[in-house]
Length: 266
Image 1: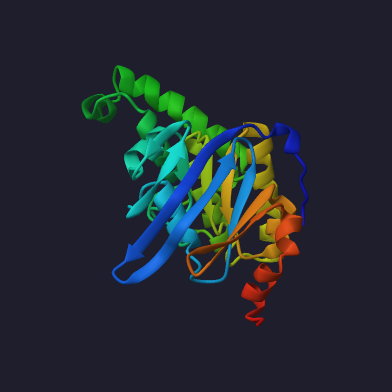
Image 2: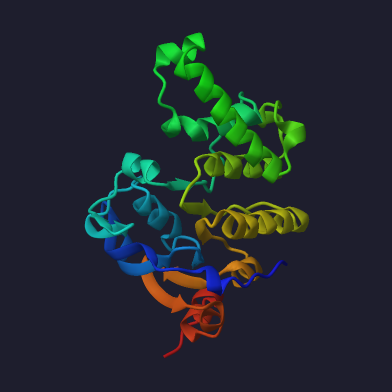
């Protein structure tokens, strides 16, 4: 697997989760969770199935509304965060289950990542006139750069429903990158991939972080990937914070070992 070391690029806090609790009926999905993400880092969120990892990302970008706590992003407090605020302020994400428009081409799917940057009216866009024409060219050029970066030029006109799973995952990453995010939330971007596909995705994640300066929050079950890519790791277990630290700190934490192995100690 590809390893990375870019601690010198990491800056101050870009996001802080403050005492967040989330419940669905009587089920406590998250219980008083607090951690931060620093600008320029790759911050992994790990834990067994049902630990609350995806719920945490959904709270960060406003898909879920936490009953308690707040999200601090770029120095402002949101209690709760709203999806349109997250998106307009540079938070983009991919999903555990691929969420693409299967009948649309790779290019058109990725163009949807530019929607919030479009200022032309619907009439201008429909008639391809005034701002509609100039914006179309500008946004298409931006998307073409992402297509080149992800090495998917050959499938730019292919409907994504015809693509193999690994390429669909890459297109979804491309759509998120087309939004030019400051904070990119990746929910199991390598789930279901073979070793070669994981190597490719790991390389793209590193390049996004290093070349674009994008801060990344990553959920991933493959521990070799997590340990190789992450600057810091937060561990959740049944909605509670179990550990937080460097990959080495987490790797050697007995509570983390027990949670993954299903071992309990008296």
